[in-house]
Length: 587
Image 1 (cartoon, rainbow, N blue to C red):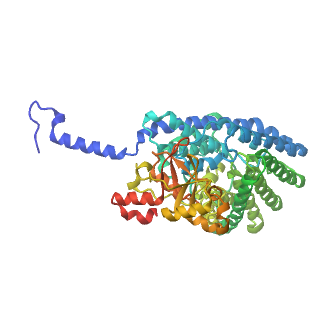
Image 2: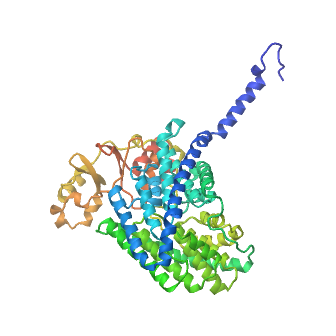
Image 3: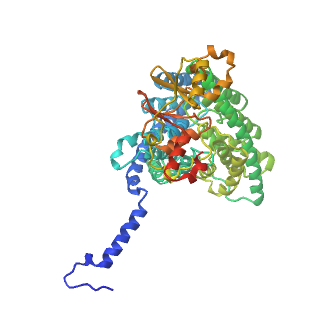
């Protein structure tokens, strides 16, 4: 071992230099994920989201819904006009103050995560929150999770544009979007762990958004702390439940999970059909909302006509959760409540109401579970089966089994029911297949190969574009396609690209109609346009989704095309870089 020479400095000793280097390497590896960056950014997302969600909760839960609820319970005739007025306001706001009245709430966040690199249009932000207040506050069969997830996600996306100086990269916008959504969920339900898990599970049916874990954790805890500092920390649906269960209860929980999974599957499929029909219906958006408001009102009116008391399938229904968990009700009343709650949700959200179906599913599952416990099991611990039903319905309806179980435990205080709830949720998730109330969820994440990281589409795109004018008839197009031997062509209207057409589409039109049919009439006009610096990994996601376009346009929205990119272009680029071994994973 080398000895220190007199007069030499300690820091110059070979051993000190050697181990200093090792310490620096270890610290670099430890903090290679930019932990410091998220320690600064995520708390800001959490605080801002917590304040906004708290404001929405106060307006709906303390200022609006209590007045409306008392009117509906004590004066049943007010239900129809009250909901019609509320949904009329929602329709007017969304039709005249937003660019797309069908884009809002949880779906907008999921779509932005998958297709827009986390970007959210903030111009209608406050209008969409107001539309959520008119939807939920007037008695729509929905709750606060929709505006909270949307509000938090939009805030995260917006803060990315304001905090770039802290070292944020383009792909960090998606992470901040999910972190904000997690913070919104954590705050509105006073359930930080639920917020984290739900936001990570939300974009996928069979995967999670792994990259957002750390910032979501921080943002959720901070948002939760912000909310409880203002509104208190007691569990949202707290109740004094049973503390034990038997092996037989586990078997009954499995059967209940099976039943809930099948019912939730039918509801999810019906909801997606109804939502698609409403979006495509050729009537004004305001009229769609009026129809939805009237249908929701009829559901509420039917229930209160036959069943007296505070249980009513309208509004955020937090009081109804406590009723289902803590107060015995007849099975007839509970099943009727679940049916009318789900039907009201079809009308409220399916017609375009601004919120989400999380609490309606949660509550319907609880009512079915409680009825199951009383009628089938004949158990006195009906609250156990209510908790299992709640978790099972959420797991099946939203494809978020972990979040479902944690949500039940955190918001009800029923931690002893985690095991039965987990069994029911797992079975419900499995038997419901891929049916989901979310039309924008994907089954799993597209493989993110390390070799694609940091590559922009400009590096792989085709600059020589095979094109055809929209006004060209199919006979002339067929001759051109045969000469150029291209599979897909960009369709131009003058100097602007407006869509694509594939050569095989000619087979869909009888040859005798070719002279009278133009390219523009059968072209695909829903082709994503991405900027030249768009990441190849994100381009691959767009090209791999269900019913995706054959190619992507590369260029600015207000300018011409710089090129196009296809899956084949990406594969060719990978081969050029000497990594042909990933061919099967990206094809």
